[in-house]
Length: 477
Image (tube, rainbow, N blue to C red; front, side):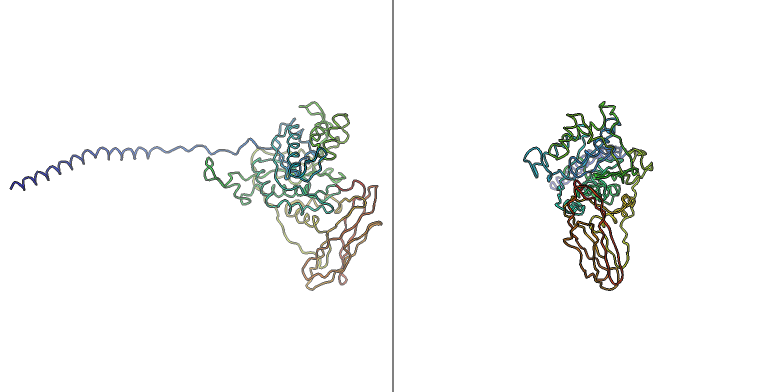
């Protein structure tokens, strides 16, 4: 009986303890429920999405091959920056590692470092501080100057991606670069490669599917290890070209023309003097730094007084062909404009045409809606020094359904010597046979224009191609 009573008491105590614990805990449970309800009513406010970094925003992006190339348009750049308060950025694809050195022994990588310093100092003298250097190799050529050689040496796609990146970062309204046309005097393949890649970048930077990793938003922009770049697609509005040609007749009226005899309001001196000063920093380079330094010291600026001529490549905002480079541009982004792209064409059954850069440019201009560049010159041309070697690449086409023997012949002006080219070539049906003709020019001192003619024949069919030559001392560069 006593045992039962103790058990009953023990059970009662447990019940009382359970009830006390339950009621003691109830306010906490209610409080937690109320707190959750209250927090649900408060929506966390996210911070603003940042805009693109405006520290490097440019009105004009100049895409070039080597430090000192900008000296060709330094007068215009000085006017734009110093007197029009526009922002200019300059991008060099190479650092000039294969150039000459008129100062000391530094060459190769060391020369590249020196030329980079020269370039930054030179551009700073006219107010340009946003300067970008890529690491494409400076590509010299002994005889053959072919843009395709530079595009191969540079690793075309890699440099293109870099230029698209800088274009999206600087977001220029206008792009200025070298004319992608083979002309007498402008034989440097690196110059033309810069023009080709700048043109391609102009047509790609606004397309979010091109180098898409550049315009993908990073997972955490404030964290480490992001592998997506967070840029914005950007469509430049105008594209202009300039050339280091031996003759300028074909440039007149194809774009704006800037006189350098006008006086800078900011510096109180003519633009040709500013151009000479800018050039004077390139003391390593033959005919550049010393010429600028001499002009400043003597007051004779004859070498720097010629007007600077540009060719309008394309404008997405209208305006006149010869109007100001920044005419009609808007501060706002413009929609992406796709180009025609490459479309194959079929020629006659038997044909010969200039190969190498001439063939490439024929397709390149049409693909990028730049057909008018193919009409700048009356005929394909190139320059060669008297006594120099001239390789001329040719393409023999057999578009027929059967194999053909195609005979290649040449008509050369007096004094020219053929080392390779004339022969009968077996060309399979619907194929192309590449031929590298090699010619030696006569030892002319006086500069003259001549024409080389190439003829292909097969089973009564014939085709011809011609190349104008600017021959003489100082003809080639």
